[in-house]
Image (cartoon, rainbow, N blue to C red; front, side):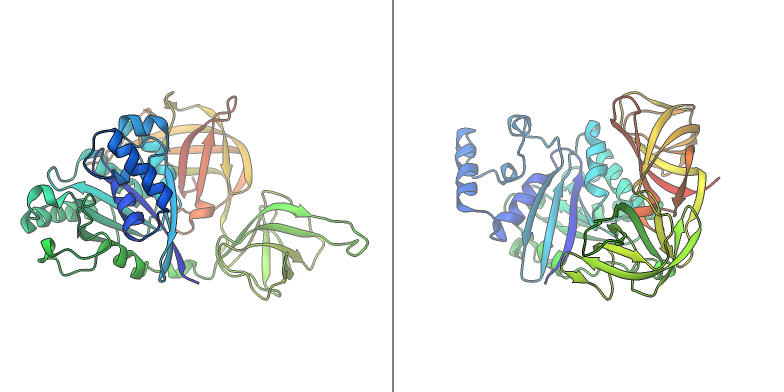
Length: 417
């Protein structure tokens, strides 16, 4: 079974993100004939000389009319080597929050840069967000090389600029490729017009990419947020009690000693069940029902954990990306959603705001739409927290407006107070 790679495209407006995904789908033979025919018809209606492959991704009517991407569009395809989930994220600054959504689950971020203009503010912003979100690898795709006569010196200068940016923003693993998405140069097949480039085309690169290893110190951690208590109470299973959820880190096995947090109770895994029968082990991403040896009090929002244990706290320091029109201020009251637990929360302090260009934090008394900054929070109930750098699932959270239920921020735990 090919391994799954989640890829988010990012960058500034008109850098060609939608065209790149459309080209990948088209040249990888992942487009149905009727889809291609519809795109060709729409392109002719707009007076284009050839099919606008961006229309394979731009699904909203407003996107098609304006030629821009507004919402995150997901496309799926597979090659013999790997399966892919591709997220096309918007380039306009007012849709930065949508980019956060697309990158939050990505393994790789493909940041596009127009060869004519180099790294623009939004390209840098998206690369910085990818670094904050701990996306495991960043690919700098220098697009529209056809418009600079496939000049190697132009490519080298943009790569040098990005290298300096990556060093300032802790982009730990990255690569650079020259492409022309419009014509397919170096997207799925190598191009003779880029003969000076001796690396693989983008698709081959993604097919064979070995992602950086996770934090070795966290490899033995077990993290299992409980979503639901299963008690069928049938004649066949009158005393059955199991805890449904998804393994977010580590590998659960019968006989493992675990802790139930935040209560701090210890027990042992008696069995791991699925609809297809019991398992001898359940690794990351596997949804299962866990039975415990002891009759302990476990409910939704609790965490089954082993290894170095996460912190149980009502206070935390976090980096947040503010997603709402109404600014964030100290004293703001919200609901905080963390794993399967929800609690009321108050922002006790807005500590600083991140300058994306310099990567410096400056003191701030609030955060505006699309700002990234550091805040202190206090919750009504204890949360079971890992630093985001250690575990994404138990280090990430959402802030929700209490009255409307609208998501106003995405957060990453830096530590406790």
